Length: 316
Image 1 (tube, rainbow, N blue to C red):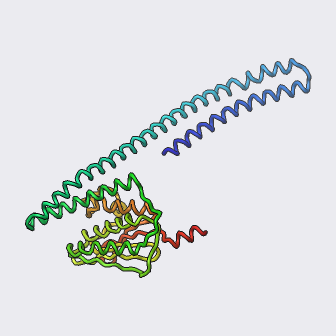
Image 2 (tube, helix red, strand yellow; image 1 turned 90 degrees about the horizontal axis):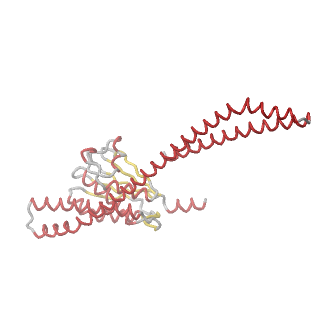
Image 3 (cartoon, rainbow, N blue to C red; image 1 turned 120 degrees about the vertical axis):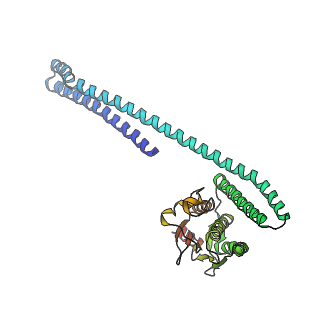
């Protein structure tokens, strides 16, 4: 939109230049005619006569039209400039609003962290009952949401440093190992499929681990009981998280990466987890896609540029 207004202003300036050039052309034509008369007759009277006659016949209507055109173009140019300034100001205000929202989310997350930790300690000291178990689960969910809010705040304010070499296979194994107890608790299983050899890429190991963890946690939460979640590490620098849940309709797959999507809109409680995944993958210059799992469910695949591919690209 900004580029469009800039082009309009440029176009108006070009038309004004054309109008001025037209005036110059008329003046030069008159001057050339007068010069020819003088060179041929060496008489001043014909030259004086033409100098009065030609401008009186040609100049007034041309000048009137050009002046009117120049005035209209000048007004249009000013309107375009004013509109461009309004758009710039709107963009600035929007960015300021987003910055305030980010800081607010980060502040709220920090404030919630301590009371949630205290509440969890008290619950751990209480007798294990159905109510206590449910409360502990709620506290865990809220703690996870707080951590996601803090992660988003860090990504928004600090960005990602992706200039370190990492082994994608090792990161995936670490996530599977850490989430295995959760899988057992949720009455699911988790496995890893690998090509066997290290898969190196440039990136941020902690961020990549966070992305894989979010996908696996999401799969554990929304897959069927007694099903298996598979983390598959492919050739190059690719990983997939495969579940056997209810799946995601194709028309809704782009929306699952938006922030604060409600579960009743998509049939899943994506919240912030998938938004963080998308942000991390984008920050590494990677691509992420969603497709159906054979037999039902969802497969989410993230693809990055492997170190070997980076080296070949640099050499070329």
